[in-house]
Image (cartoon, rainbow, N blue to C red; front, side, top):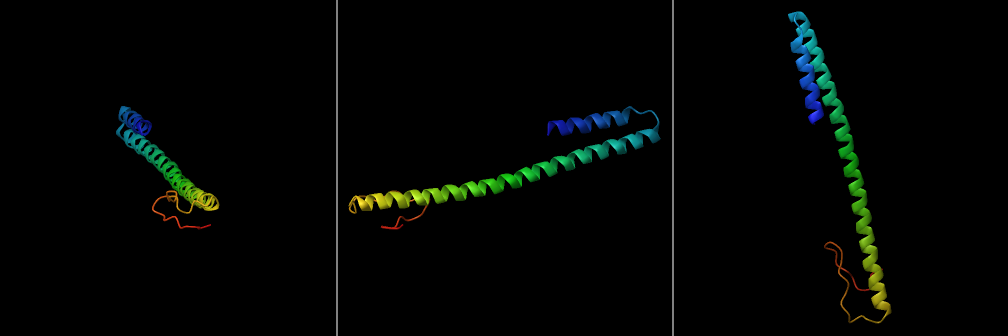
Length: 103
């Protein structure tokens, strides 16, 4: 963000350095155009990266949840095979209820 502000500041300084008022107006318009293009490019990159992050975060959350469910099912089957039906059930992941004998 600081780089974008530096670019705008540099462009506006160059525009104000011109002597002729007509040149000042043209240079100011060109400087503003450069600043707007930089802003648009930055927003395109930022939004693309934000959407990519949201997509990847969603996929990893689903993967972690499925691994947690598989782990609980596996531990339940191990406890059931050992004949430890009276033992406490393993903790269920994130608000899920571990069913006895669920596979």
